[in-house]
Amino acid sequence: MKLSELIRALPSAEVVNPGDAEIHEIVSDSRRAQAGDLFVAYPGVAVDGHRFIPQAVAQGAAAVVAENAEMQTLLAARGIPLIRVPNGREALSHLAAAWHGFPSRRLTVIGVTGTDGKTTTATLICSILQTAGFETGLISTVAAFIGEHYIDTGFHTTTPDAPDVQKYLAKMVEAGARCAVIESTSIGLAQYRLAAVDYDVAVMTNITPEHYDHHHSFEQYRAAKAMLFQNLLTSARKPGVRKVAVLNADDPSCDYMAAIHSGQPVRYGVRQPADITAEQIRQACAASAPCRGAWSAFWPDSRSRSW
Image 1 (cartoon, helix red, strand yellow):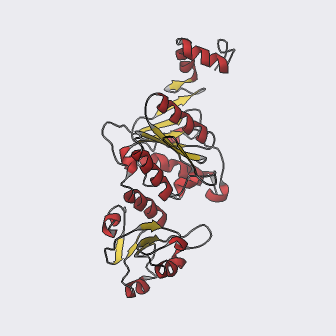
Image 2 (spheres, one colour):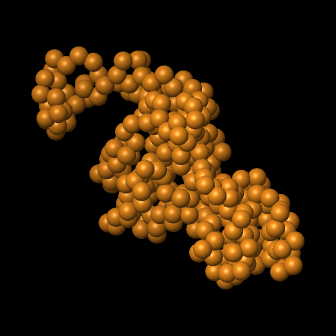
Image 3 (spheres, helix red, strand yellow):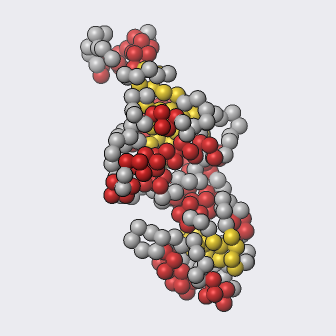
């Protein structure tokens, strides 16, 4: 793919050293850089990727995307294009999406965030959609499920890196999936791993204090979660697909998230007034024999259960 095609996918970019190299791969790890690759540099948690631009170039990188232009002279002397961006992590996400042909634009994408229950909720949603006849893929902190294939996603603590997310989504499209469910962690959102995913539904389970080692405060943690709902405002619109926020009415952060979404959110809850309540579900199950049996298996005393 031509560098110029990839640059068009970036929300903001300045071409410092011009050129239109043929790109063979996109990498952010200089150790993996090979001839014809596009190297994306950004400050990491422990080290600054800009330090490794000379190594990537020595190994054959054909172009560089970076947050600063400190290596402009070195790159210009070798005829290597340099593209400057405000945020390297965000740029990597958009470049990966472009590389794979923007797969999330060909899927109905549901994101699930929250402190508790993300993996369980995402897995249940995927199962429900599949049972309803919608071919659906899943990306969680545990694994990616694409058709009949299981892919281990790594450390099982956060969202996969942006290139992997886009690769999994592309494989879902190739497999004929119509929907994708993505467990969207606060760290994954804050590090822009999901910036180029075009979400259609954003779901919040709950928000309680966690990950202060990364976010430093509850306000920063909640703001990271909110990036999922902000995505609904900026992501690509798909024919016949409405952007929907699904919020836990019993959680104190419900109104905070609802204020971000431009449309009417769908609230669910047990204690607070909501669009979907546990009592409504109980009544629906009571009217359905198969559902009534399943409900009783979980709550044998469901007739007298008080919500």
